Structure formats: structure tokens, C-alpha cells
Image (cartoon, rainbow, N blue to C red; front, side, top):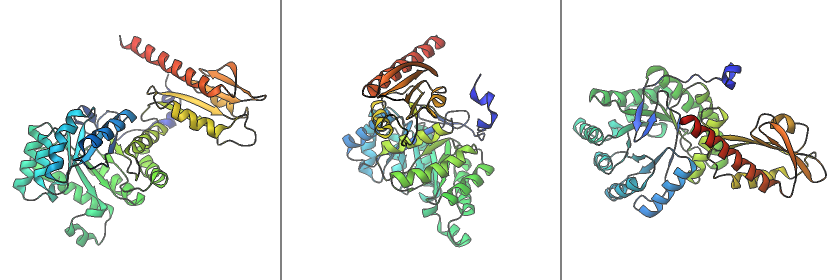
Length: 374
């Protein structure tokens, strides 16, 4: 019996959307919400870009976007897509030839605004290239680059203008009988983004890519993204997400997963439940959690770990986690396994011991899943 069955208030009822494929990753429908990031290397630095793609994929990125601003970048994209373990989205803004070249180079998706790349004939050429090379499209509406006629009509970027822009671009693709696309309506303002996405979700069943664009640095951007994306996801809106941070792309992936994990929408790696620490702590909680976060980055199996400094909340939290450690006295604490008291362990040896217990538990979960699949 699942927790969601026992506790219906935990349920999130996702908006029904049609499903497309971005390479081998399904987006929309009943597919898991995918996590994306974007490289910040110069694309013609093929070695550096591939290294960043590989690091993002190792962190759990399902899809990685790469900017293709010029012909040299489009040529470099061919090797990047060949070496990438995940689908590559080519970021195209204005030049229709870059879209054609990117599709030919193996991009799984083109990020474009059809209305920004020239005449109807040029749009048709890009759509043909996408269709011929099994390439999907993301319509990327951004509050900072709305069409001039919409700004004149509405006076400023607003949800109505962003949605109208999106629907205009959708019409262009559908008029050309192309339906393998998703759409985003991003802004750096949380309120504007949320309102635009809510309005968009009401007027189309197309898969939605969520993001708070240009959210800021690691701390401020994480908070803005968690508030904006978290509320939309809680409402059931969103099929794929990208957390936009002025930080290493790997950090974007980590934050994306943490947002999804907090809502029970994706589960990957160790979910550490820890206290903020206080005078009651029986060990240094903050340093212990920092060490464990680094030591357990290699664990991909979804599982939970509680690290609580004292016996006030520790035993209760440990009852609900795969592995737990609760601070006690005399330089030792209690280890919990599968929600039950197991044995005492000294504070000096606890980090190594907890890592060992987590690895063992992960191996047990993986073995059980493998048996069930046979």
C-alpha cells in the first residue's frame, strides 16, 4: 500500500498533456518529469562542452541544451551529439539555417520561436529538417524578448502577451502539420512566470517545459525556482523542467531533482533528512551532513537517510527512513535500519559506517528490483 493511498493529501494530479519524444526521452503524458540543464561552455570547445554534458548526465540530467549561435557551433554539434549519453537540444534563436544544420547534426530537439526565423518558407524548411531527422521542437517564449507588436498591444510583458505569443507560434507549427513540440513561457519574475504558465495550461494540451529564466545565483536562484516551479508542479503543471542558475550546470540538475523529490514526483539518490542542530546535539550535525552529501553522491538508488542530533525527534524520523542515526551520549549514537533500532556506533566512526550501511541498503533495493523484473 503506497503512502499516497494512505494519505490522499499527498497526491498531485498532473495536467493531461500529449506526449512527444526528445530523442529517447518521453516528455508529457504519463512520463516522469524530466530534468534539463544547459552547457555554458563555448560550443566550439568540443572537448569542454562534452565534458560538461557528461558531468550533467552523471548528475542525472535527462536532457542537455547546447547553444548553437553560428555555423561553427553547428558543425561542432555533430561530435557533441555523437558523444552525449543524453539527448541534446540545440538552442536556436533567429537564423533558420542553424536550425536545419542542428537537426542534420543529430540534435534531438530545436529550441526556437518559429515566428522569429523569417519567412513562412524558411519556417517550413526548418520544420522539414526536424521531421526528416526525427527532431522535436521547443517553442521558447520569454518575457524579455516578446514580439514588438505584442508589446505595443499590451504595453508591457504580461501573462496575456506571453500566452498569445505562444499560441501564435503553436499555430505556425500546426499549420505545417508538425505536432512534435513542447512549449515554455518563461520570465525572471516568479509571479509573471506562474501566471503565464497557469494561463497556458488552460488553453493547450501541449507538453510544457517549466523554468524561471535568469533566476540568479545558486542560493537566490534556487529559492526563486523552488517557489515558482514548486507551486506549478504542485498544481500538476509541467512535463520537463530546467532550473536556470548562474552556477555550474550540475548544480541546476541537483536543484531540479531536489524540487521534484520534495513533491514526490521523482526519486533519485539519497534523500537526507537532517536537523538544523542545536545545543542538544550529540555530534556535529552540520559537518556530518556535509560529509555525507559528498560521500553519497554516487548513490543513484532512491532511498532515505535521517541524521538527527538528539533523541527528541531522532527516533521518530528514523522510523520512516531506510537508514538513520540519532545522537545520544558518551560519544555514540543509535543506528536505525529499515525504521528499527539496530546498534550503537561511535561518533568518530559514524560517517564511514553510515556510508557502508547506505551502500548495502542500495544494493539490497537494486537486487530486489532486479528479481521483480525477471
